[in-house]
Length: 222
Image: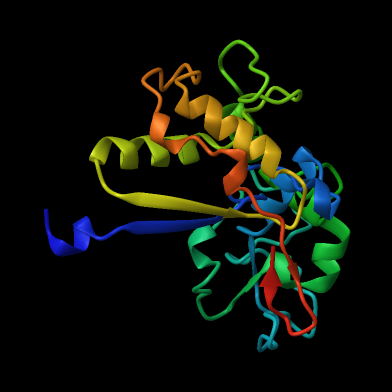
């Protein structure tokens, strides 16, 4: 094993819209969050130079390929999640346009929104995230989805099987860490049907959970 691959790996994950759909602390339901994720991958044709926050002075009215947002094309322009941190010239993020975000982000693929053309893609995402097994108190939610994204479990499983030394750090501004803790512990105990071998070393005990806050100097204290 090379020196680089043997180094202890520390992975930091935000919770909401990263390993879990929904953001109760931010006032977002599961559907709100799913719509927002799609909206963040949608791009418009820029109407001029982008401001500091990625907004155009004039709200865009066409998707990045020139298709007017008012139309309903049979094949909508592809969503571009890879452009989030590297937006090409001439494009502007839908989610960074104040008027579009305010009016449509949480209902992006609903009827009446420009993003309604992506309704089929939202349903494909919903189907892919659906819990495919018997309900589980920690691993599945009341809306029929898994508590955490499938890719997160796969990441933990791959790292565990690799034998690599690693740590996972989770953070949230909300109150959902107990749910995340319960899901990770169920996975570690082998209760996830897709990973029956589990990973006992990944259990997250109560003493490794902290609630911190900023002090007057901006430092985080437990």
